[in-house]
Image (cartoon, rainbow, N blue to C red):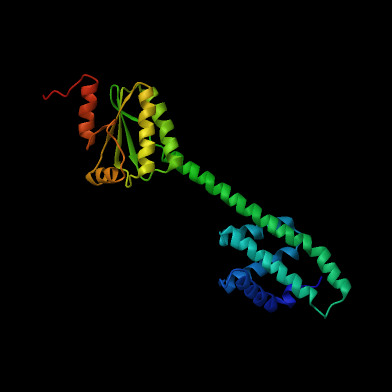
Length: 259
């Protein structure tokens, strides 16, 4: 079998570089990436081992993580290879026909294998994120009879907010909490979205007959809430967890006696 890619490798590499710039409005691409892409095609079309093709595509997809650019580059490599072969005057029509018949399908298989590897990597990353999200799930901590605390730590996005909502509802029912303190001391950023999610949680807890107190509102957080025009007048708030506990004791008709 004639190794057409080896014969025209330098021409293919320079052709891919030129075509890449033409089709990306002058965007440059590293020579190393072009060479790797040419080698990927070479290693896979001159092998009938499907498992080998998948392994090579897997290694390539791990090295170059950006899906659209890498698949587009492989398509350019294949296009330039075909162009070089078709323009060749040193081989017979029969040889050209054999090359096309044997390798067009293999080239499409390379793209398919790459797409499958990127899809697999994406799904793995999503599963990893979901598992990390579960680890970040915030348990409700009962501190006294009928009083629980929900300490929020770190950034809260929409997905995590949904998880927190589930934790709150399950935890309040499990611990039979009459008062829930939501401690936002360790939440670095409070914006409209975060506040919306917290307010939704408070409303949901209220439907279960539990009073919710937002604690840990630092001066800078209070300033942000005011500047965003967020109205917390209908929600119980305190600056510290200690004051929140005192308010929770009052609501449950208890108090701390000094000894």
